[in-house]
Image (cartoon, rainbow, N blue to C red; front, side, top):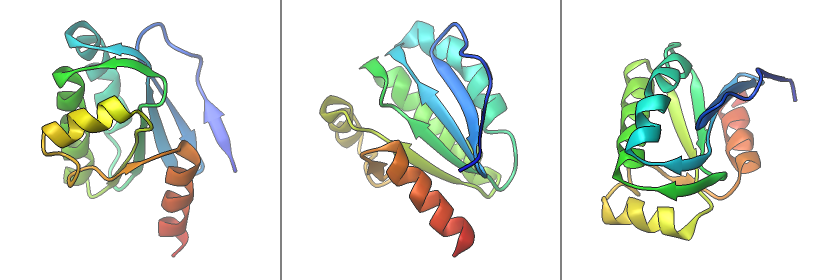
Length: 126
């Protein structure tokens, strides 16, 4: 699997290319302050048309409604550009927030990044 990566940023988001997939990792506390910092980088990472994008919430320590807004924003951008968004969410509390926001149907959470990358790869080759 080909992987390229830039240096870890100071903040709450890191994006990298893994094969033909854009992986966006959120980390730390995703609240109103973090959302304001994340949005420009999230827009840059979701700008290309026709991409498969994985958002990985594995390293997240706190997640609130502003995190939901970021996910919906990313999904809308990727879909408008005829791409596909996958979500990695191993946290029961974040899954509970997704259910409470009636967003489980919009995002089909996967348990691990490896699972999302395998699904993205099978879609690309299938």
